[in-house]
Length: 62
Image 1: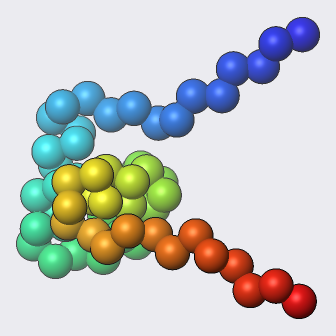
Image 2: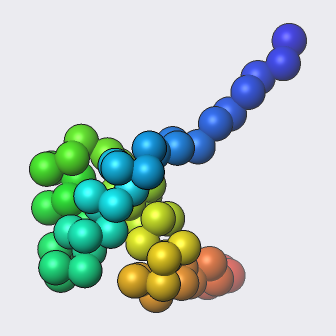
Image 3: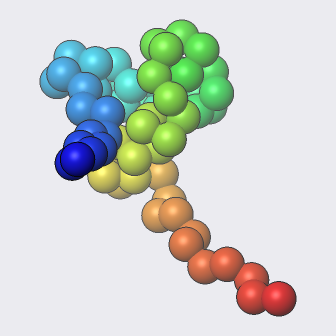
């Protein structure tokens, strides 16, 4: 059985709405509450647009 995992893909209008909120300085949580889109999705679009800093993907080793 094959599983297909798709990331959230927003319409151009939804994307622009999120980017405008980020430009206004709103938090990811505030945008999430307003739009219903996950913070992770909002962050991804914000990073792709250069409005947010890149994610730090390093983890501390024990």
